[in-house]
Image (cartoon, rainbow, N blue to C red; front, side, top):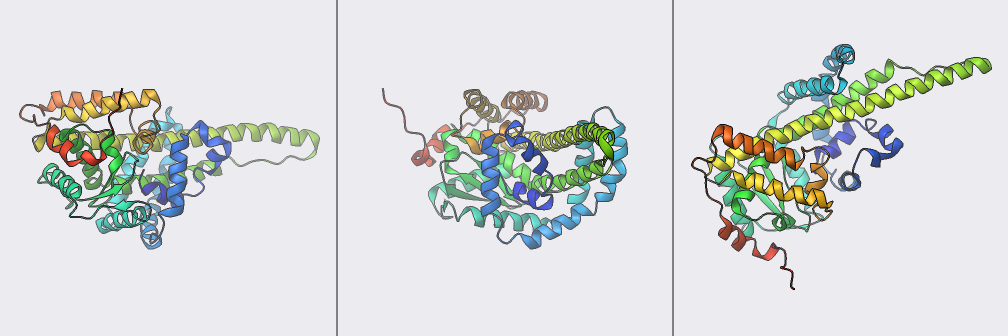
Amino acid sequence: MALENVIARKLAPGFKKPVFERGAKAIFKPAMIETADKLATTATGGIPELLAKVQAAAKGFDGHVVANMPGVMAGGNHVAGLQQLYTQLADKAVATIDPQLDEQLGKLQLAALTEKAHLLPDDHPLTSYLQGVVDRTAGPDAKYPFKVHVLETDEANAFNAGGSTMVVYTGLFKTVKSEAELAGILGHEMTHGDNRHVMKKVVSQSFSATADAWHSAQHPLVQGEGFFGKAKALIQNTKTSAQLIAFKENNFEAVRNMQRGLEAEADAGGARRMAGAGYDPHGLSAWFQRMEGEEKQGSHGLNGLLSGFMNDHPTSVQRVAAVEGQIKQEGLDRTAKETGVAPYLAATQAYQPVPKTA
């Protein structure tokens, strides 16, 4: 869970409201709602100026959204049409946003998070170890000088907060078994940063709000005079409400599918980065396979990662298949073999799960 969810709410405060009024549990997992609400109240300091600039960039493409909506609605698959539109416009919109805003966003989020959890110092052995893995995995083509920040918390999570800011929660080490797995996760997050996925998520939410407003304007509610007129208006309004609800659900799914596409892009980038650094790329798929087991068990102890997997991420089954297919197609494991189990366990020993006694 990252700050783009908070910014999206501020950019498009009305987008999710009707869905929540209908009962958010039908669409969102409770863990997602809880985490988003927590961030909305704690991680907003210092954002207004940045927010205004991002909003201005997104609003500059509202005309493109409106111009394309008739064609999208004329198509047979509204979800696919909206997803394609948002993806194309997000690339164009983000290209107009100064990359320094990504850096500022990352620092703002980190500052907010450190108010709630202890930040290990840069010279802490664990931070130094993780920074070494980041430096090795980033590769020569990295666009940012990625810097890792470690927060002591039981939540299993790691994410790019924007720009060069990498955040790792110590709870992650309960799920990771080797340095190769860790490198894959960090490579995934660095791909998010280099490809500016945080900003793309933010502007896509703004586009979806514009599309929702356009669609609502095409379906005004009607008023009737007299008994029969009111009855007719009631029937018409029922049909209109159903159309509005259907569009909101399609619109939500389109944004979610776009975000899943960004996750798949980050998975592919993570596999390439770790293989390029000499790590066994099967480590990433091995970690996904372990997460698949957690999903089947409905684990809530890893809510920072697993709540996303079932919502705005592909499923772990899909991710394992995609990474393994990529490894075979690109030959990523021809020379990349290192797993690094021993150094990983030594560095993270204090945060490993306590073995169960008989």
